Image (cartoon, rainbow, N blue to C red; front, side, top):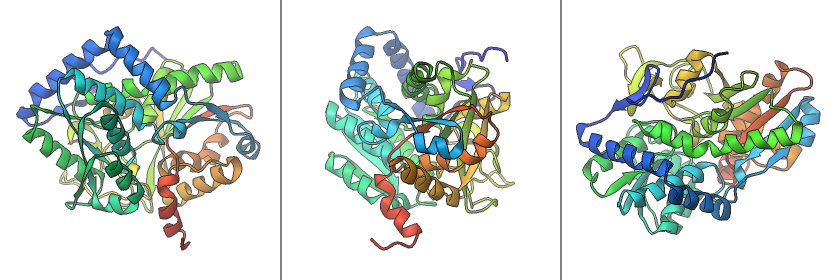
Length: 399
């Protein structure tokens, strides 16, 4: 395999994916973010402060935990990258803190964000409380119902949570409202996008902030096993936890990179959120990528048992990696995700987020294609506390 080139290009494109498709009003703000981020990358003071917060506040490095009983059951060596042990309970805090520091560098005092499962919202609210920034988070009312504890957590942190009633009342609608807010308040507001999607430079910037996951995992598995893994596995919504794990392994040709999308409860449009299994090339919310859309190019509704994977498009770098054949993508149904919760909880004493459970749920299928001595790293992107009530409801258990 030839070396993977450095992407995106100067126009923010990963091959034919990515770019900027936004109102003209936002172009100066995006240019400002690009300039500030490029300067921050080479600023020792910025990098030192981010490192200090990640280590002393977030709790990095997160452990790479041997899943002993799960390994025995699947007859492969399974290692779990424990992003669920980050402060706030998920990987989202890595990017939220980085962008909150960038907000201060931009001289802005107000932050907006979107959230689906609520973890990015909580992470952003946390970073803003820590750094003294005003914060507003947009969240679809259907996601607010599914993730009520996270809504209250954001409010406890001093953040204004705005329920979105339009469309499917989920993540894509929250993004729409956040973009409208940004256009109106661009002079004093920074939009902290939570996944590796949207207009340039967000897919690149979020990837870079989340690549700490893969850098740590690569060093940890080499120390533990004396070799690189046969495969790295992560769930994929917009794609931030997956690209964060994958990116430091891109030029390790023998490491398979496997993303798992939300297969929902059927194969028809509107029954799932598997963009690579039903989607097509299109433009959506500031970028070009795979989009779940009908023959007329209209974005269709999505479905997933997990609010964090319920999105109609996918980050452009994932689309580019799939086209190149460097990463592969599978789908896990709602039933498989729920089974994944039980599989990890009952064998390892770890209750994963419903998002992360998609990666766990298809592990039996994935390892069947791997050698008997295979080493597999799975990203547990978040903990399942937020999902316990929803899992009980879905399984007919009265709390």
